[in-house]
Length: 139
Image 1 (cartoon, rainbow, N blue to C red):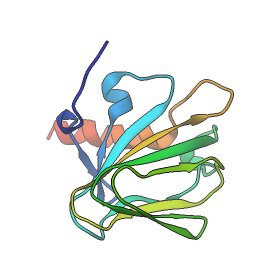
Image 2: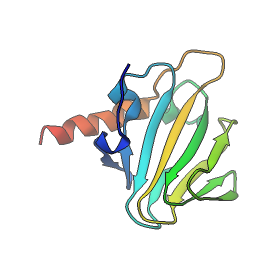
Image 3: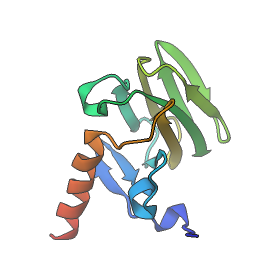
C-alpha cells in the first residue's frame, strides 16, 4: 500500500500548467492518472488534444476528469462545460477533442485514463514530460 497527498507531488511547469505525475510517482501500471493545477484564472489546465494523435501513443484512451479545487471550463468537441469542484467530465470517445482552462485561480483537475479491453501503456508524451522533470531536478 502507498499513500500520498496531492500537495506532496512535485509539480512541473509544462505547456503553461503545473503537471503532477501521480502515475509515475506511485508506480501505477493499470491506468494513467495525473493532476493539473492552474495558478490563475485563464491559465490552461491541459491543451486541446484527442487520444488518436501520435503524441498519445498507439492506444486509444477513455478519459475521466474530476475537478478537485477551483473551477474549470472544459470544451469537448465544441461543447462548453462549466465545471465547479466535484464535477466529473467523462470523455469516452478517444477521438473527441478536449481542452480545459481554469476559471478560478488554484484550480486542480485530476485526469484518469486508459484503453478499453487491453492493458494500459503510457503514451510518448509522458516520457517527454518526465524527462523535463529529471532535467529540472539536476539543475
